[in-house]
Image 1 (tube, rainbow, N blue to C red):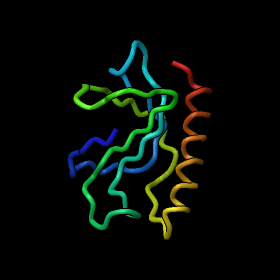
Image 2 (image 1 turned 90 degrees about the vertical axis):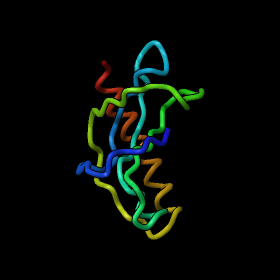
Image 3 (image 1 turned 90 degrees about the horizontal axis):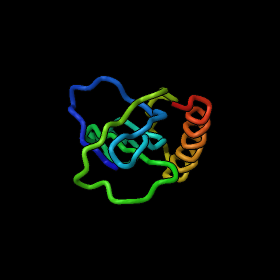
Image 4 (image 1 turned 180 degrees about the horizontal axis):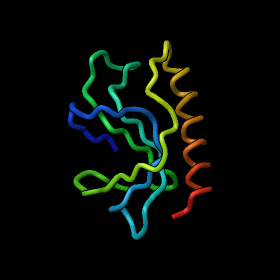
Length: 103
């Protein structure tokens, strides 16, 4: 899910999250909140959410993204490959955190 965010928001980074509104219980995931400095120069503020173990259509749905833990700050990468490797580490860290903090 890519969700536009008010540009006045001052927090950014990568977070362990759960999302309500797509099923009977919250769905675990990892989210990046920022301006996507590696892929866009001067990009708009965007919340990108990857849900674990879920597939379906989220367009037009009203959801609540619950932030549980900040994993790291937003970083600029010199290559898409380096960014992709970090995204995999972030997903692993978020899944580990959320498994240890079941709600």
